[in-house]
Length: 251
Ligand code: GDP
Ligand code: MN
Ligand code: MN
Ligand code: MN
Image 1 (tube, protein in one colour):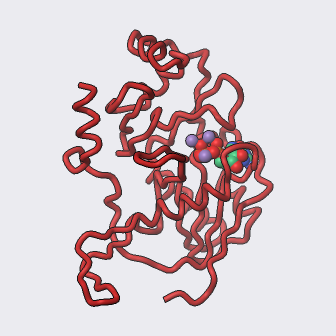
Image 2 (cartoon, rainbow, N blue to C red; image 1 turned 120 degrees about the vertical axis):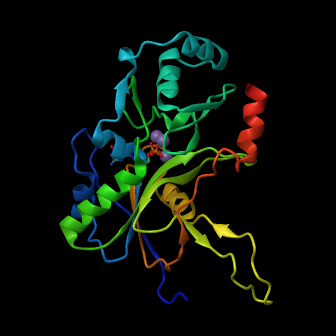
Image 3 (tube, protein in one colour; image 1 turned 90 degrees about the vertical axis):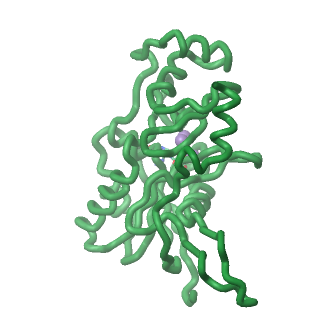
């Protein structure tokens, strides 16, 4: 049951992030964090701070990257970066859709050319769960507070137009609120409903961040109700109907 209003605070005044920056400390300097706050951090700044970036000029495209670059009208070196970040290609055209090592499936493997210098690409962090743990630990070290961390990325989706923010790594919370076994207002037992809370919070944080020149790569949520469930956010290959059909189409 909720009593206090939920506060949502965009973190203003962060600099352009460079390799070696302590993102947790930079956030703590700008917003006094409280016990139980949830902090969404754009994967873009986490990756820039860790150096998960590459200049296109240092990438040599393979034959496959050259072929897919021509097919999709993209720089073959960018395509090579996407292939390098992928563990399984699900679809090749009109854009590459692929799986990453940590289970996320994304358009162009989440490789990003926005909000970084010309000629550079940003990769998603290779182990975003570990990244979220690390940021949470660092914030506890600085402030003594237990917070929740969500590393986000803007992602496309099936069935509907428009990108939304998704959680790609989280710590200090469970990904999913499990309603199975709960009863509705009429006493019916819920059999199916699992709510992807980390994606919902990431989605609203994305709205506060924006996509362009807002300069707000972190958002604090204060006063969210607690939930319990599990962390099994990613479908396995067999469970995922959409992926099965797409792979059949492209194999
Ligand atoms: P992504 O969704 O992780 O790919 O991140 P975006 O490129 O969409 O950026 C999300 C938000 O962070 C936007 O408000 C950007 O202007 C902002 N942003 C990106 N990089 C930086 C940075 O280095 N410093 C600051 N202050 N803001 C940034
Ligand atoms: Mn971006
Ligand atoms: Mn991105
Ligand atoms: Mn974005």
